[in-house]
Image (tube, rainbow, N blue to C red; front, side, top):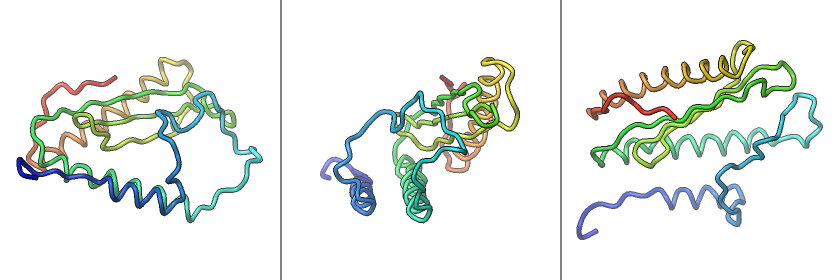
Length: 158
């Protein structure tokens, strides 16, 4: 552009939606019911594993290339969101961690993982989720240093 460089992955995102027949889908803030409890013994239709892995791989590529685009921008801060679903798994009573990391307003990575042990309280589940979040933050700060991007401390965790 005449007054700067504009980088966007909108074309890749649209091609990805077309590839997976999702062009007519509407955006939602939470793509799944929040009150849904999943179980191993669920009799839902089977999932096409090859297509699912392809979708996840495409999303990971989209997100993994985000820091390269963000490198051109200066003055952004790392913000983290952490949550735990206490006794979320009906099969083994384990809790689930969920974290999301933003640089400025852009989501750069997220993960959701079942905790390794059973939490005895919501507080314990949240502490375990926060610990996992802090571990990822420390890794991300080191990665930003490698990219010669200084991160202001402390990092905000919600």
